[in-house]
Image 1 (cartoon, helix red, strand yellow):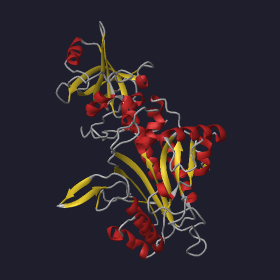
Image 2 (cartoon, rainbow, N blue to C red):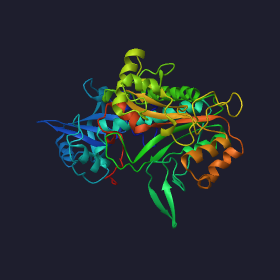
Image 3 (cartoon, rainbow, N blue to C red):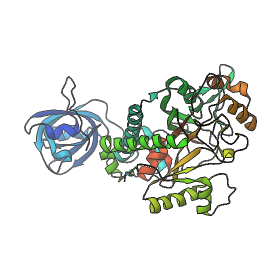
Length: 453
């Protein structure tokens, strides 16, 4: 269970989770939302909700009962009363003989009661009124898991001497050829919302050597599926002086282990509420080559990518053969990877400049996808770092070098062998909690049709 220091505000507000630590008979003040009212013949129970959880208030005096009747659920209140031990109350203690003060006007009723175990309305209603429905403990818990995951990611990479960066989200050129982008009128010029921080984090390897970013990325997805969003949160990392993509995979393993550990310490109650079974992160992820993966799933050997059904089959195999929720598929075809991807071959730090297959002729790449419980979670790998390789890569993809002049300058002035990865936060959380639709774990999802709230 996570430990929390007591609140230390000037007016000595007590949080719900702290109530049991207050001596019985002492006076305490709670502030929060009226989560639920249970009106019985001679007593009314009020459950108060704050950022730490729930606390019960017992109301018996006629004057206090009348006051509570004027405080609908979700009204923000202050309650002062006497602490009383009660094993059946949330946290093992409750307030009695309370005095209520409304801190706002009486609240409107939510679209569905937030005190019920599940929110009794469909996903469209929930998303249309997210500012209120996110208050439901189960919906709130999903993002508590996300928040802990981000803290764990930052902590794990910080311990490896990565520098956190913040890159532009308005860019002058698309990051990845072939991907759909959002265009923006930028003072009369055409700009784009960044599909990823990829080019910037590579450039900054030349400055800091190891970098990471947690931030939004944008994809103009023209299809509406349960696993895609037009804006999502990406956990990106890039590191220099690697031998090949296996070094990147090792750091990815450390990052995910840190995310799991942070959920255990910072969001244990949220995970328990949602019935999350946290994965065991192995010392090394099991790895299979792309060509072998195609054989295993019975696909055409010339297939350029894995389908969702293939990913599920491969994950089932990893669970049985390796007792692992994770499987890295390496060696994706160069044709399916961005222009900056390093071809499969000898480690980039060894041998003469041309010790690997040519960028224009190599079939497979030093890249990977990490599958987690049947779903692609991460894409990563080794990048090109020699200027001559970029000349060949841009010729192969028909990319105009002048469009990426600032990016290419970094390589002309010396860049180490490097690589990185990106984790989709919402995909990670969605898989952990067993969400049927990725929108269930996004705060305010953006997709083909949704631009508000």
